[in-house]
Length: 210
Image 1 (cartoon, rainbow, N blue to C red):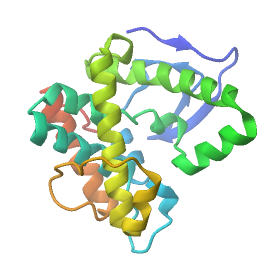
Image 2 (tube, rainbow, N blue to C red):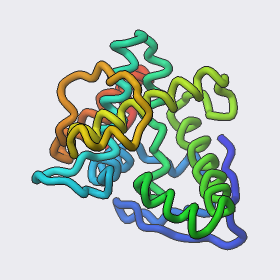
Image 3 (cartoon, rainbow, N blue to C red):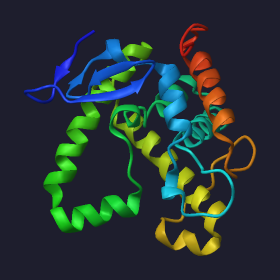
């Protein structure tokens, strides 16, 4: 497994279980899928700008999008790739789409380019750790299929949380065939479902066990 140095000097982050990880070194050996499930289950999509006791989490988005891919295509490989698409948020955190657009307007495309490069390095490390294809080996069709599902899921989530008026911010695409509604899960459920789907997608019962 190859690690990629992103910064000249280490930049340490605490990620749980007493670990300090150098996020300036994208290293498959430090990827902990149980911590990923826990972190993504508590990271709110739409910056939690909605009513209710629970946030719609990055983990729920990943699981329900992956489930929809299986229902629609029976392609477990593609579903597994979707599940880990935002895994880099364990190390880098995440921003909502409006926040990203605001930064692009104020900072130009350079910030977006650098952000994508950093995320890509961590994505490669994460998929290596899971024993999956890394994004640089995906076909154009795979990239497009994953992006389509992300847009479809995001649009359906926005409508669920904010009402039909939220559809104006998205292209007119079909709602995904999710398993159950898109109403927010408790973090505990999102964490468990993320691990269960990861084990199913990889065929590894041990993966994600803390």
